[in-house]
Amino acid sequence: MSTAMFRRSLRTAERRFCTSSECPRVMLSTSEQIPGRKIKEYKGLVIGSTVRTKDMTKDITSAVRAMFGGELPHYTQLMSDTREEAISRLEDQAVGLGANAVVSLRLTSSNIAASASEVMAYGTAVVIE
Image (cartoon, rainbow, N blue to C red; front, side, top):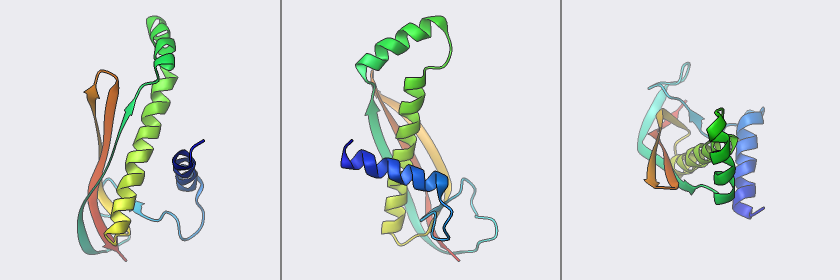
């Protein structure tokens, strides 16, 4: 496992199982506010983006499975990992601006090429009380 993959899996685990008062390092909200918190300062737009390609061996397995219907777990996991990476990059950019939260968080995806997809997370970095 590469160092980057290890860090990404560690961040994902921290986000899912965090119980300390320091976590999460950046609060995320899809709404314009965070209930019970006051926005003190707006830092601006933050974006996290990543492009991923399909694994050709898993692509063949999924093509066979698609003939019979049902979920394609290889693609589901690929898109889940891609979303996590995009959100992690958004959080990194927010921290770099001095923010401790992101509001109006949105995710979008698009096909870049026949076998590559981009996932982008974007929102407004803010400082909350």
